[in-house]
Length: 612
Image (cartoon, rainbow, N blue to C red; front, top):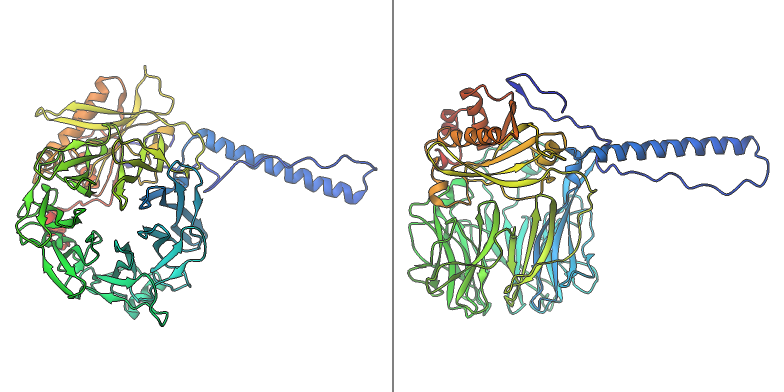
C-alpha cells in the first residue's frame, strides 16, 4: 500500500509480486568457445541464446526485487502447514503431515502428505505420494504400519482408510465405504482399526459438488459421523468387513479412545451434527463383544475428550459447567471405567483444558491450554493437586500427542519469526527436538513482535501483540493497524507472522505499518472470568480496551494518531463496524465476515445459545 486512504474508506492490500512460487533464476551457463567463424544459423542461435539469457536475467532481477521488498499476500501461501505429529510406540521415529498450497489453473487447495523422521531429526523423507492428500497417520502397536486417510484411487474417490508399511512399499486400501473416513486408531492389540465414517452424500448433493454449487440448507440432509471398526488383517477370503458400532441416533466426535484391553471404546457424541448441540455432548462406552453402548456418567454438563488410564480402571474426561455455555468454564474429571459419578480435578489457568492423555505413572493427566499468547502443557494430579507446568513459559506447544508408551510427545511449534515445524520430546524433561526442516522460505525482512500490556479505563489489564514495521529503529511514529480476532473467545498467539491470513501481519509490517493485535476482554487464555467479561456487552468494555491500547502506543511515540486503521474477522468484523460508528479516529477499516445486525443474527443463526 502507498499513501493513506481518506477517512471511511476500505483498506485494501495490493500485490506487487511476480506471482505464486516466483523464484529467482540463475543466468544461463556459457556455451563452449567458438572454434570456427560463425555462419548465419550460428548467429541466429546466438541471438536466441542472448534473448533467453536476457529474459532469464530479467526474471531473476524481478524475483529478487520482489523478495527484497518483503512479504506479499501471495508469498504467504509458500508457508507449509505442519501437523499433526505422531510418535511411534517405541519412540524411535515420528510421522507428521505436511500440507502444501496447490494453486494451478482452477486448482486451489491444500495437498497434504505424510513424512517420517528419526527421533534425532535425521533421515526425514516423504512416506506417501499421491495427487490426493494423505492425512491422519496412526501407528500400529508393533510400529510396522501406519494407517491413514486418503481419497486416492480415482477422480471421484472418497476419503478412505489405507495403510502403508513403514519400511517402504505400496499403500493398501482397507475400506470401500460410501461415506468419508476420518480419525483412524489401532486397537492396543493391533487387531482392529477404529475410525469414523460420515453419512454419504446423496445424488443431488454429489451433482451440486461437481457443478460447484456450494449453497446449502444447514438443517437439511444432516450427516452423522458413526464409530466403525475394521480388521487390520483380512479374513481367510481376503476381505475386511466394516462393522458400525453406533447408529443414526448419535453423531460421534473424533475424540474416542481405546481401552488398554482392546475390548471397549470410550467416545463422546451429541444427538445431531447441529453446531449448537455441543451443549448436549455426552461420553459413552461401547462394548465390542456385546455390541452395547452405555453412558459413562450422567450429568447436566457437556462431556467430551475421554481417555483411559494406563490400567484401564479410570477414564479422564472434560466436563463443562452446568448448564454449558459458549466461552464458559470446564475442567478435567475422572470417573471409574465401569461408570459412576465423575470427580473433578483442580482448575486450570484458563479453565478450558484439552486432555493430551494420561501420563505413564497413571497418577497424572496431561493437559494443553492457552495461557496468554502461548500454548503450554501441564500435569494434573488425579488426587486433586494443582497443575504443574511441563513446558517453559514462552513455549508454543501445539497439537500435542503422546505415543502409545506415554514416553514421548509429538507436537508442532512456531514463533513470530519462524514458521511451524514438527517436533518431539521426552515427556519429562521437556527438551524439544526438531524432526525436519520442511519450510522453504526466503530470508525476508520482518518486523519484531513483542507482548504489550496496558490498563483499560476500568483498571483491567489487557494484553496484545505489537509487531513493528520491518526495520523499525524507533524515534519516529508509524501508521498503526489494529486487528481484532474472532470469537469473541478467540486469542492472538505468538504464531508466525507470515502465515496465510485474511490480514497477513508480515505483509503489513513489510509495507511500513505497525500492527497491534488486541486480546480484549472476552478472549481465551486469561481465565473464565476474563472470557465472560464482555458477555452482553459487545461494544462496551471491549471497545474501550481497543482504544486504550491505541492510546498507549500513541503515548509511547510508536503510533501516529493521524494514520490509524482497524480490521477484524467474524466477531472482529462486528467490533470493527462498531468502532467506526463510535469514533472518527480511524482513517480506514476492513470488516471481514462480520455480524452487523444482531437482530437479524438472532432470527437466522444456527447457534442461538451464542447470542450475546
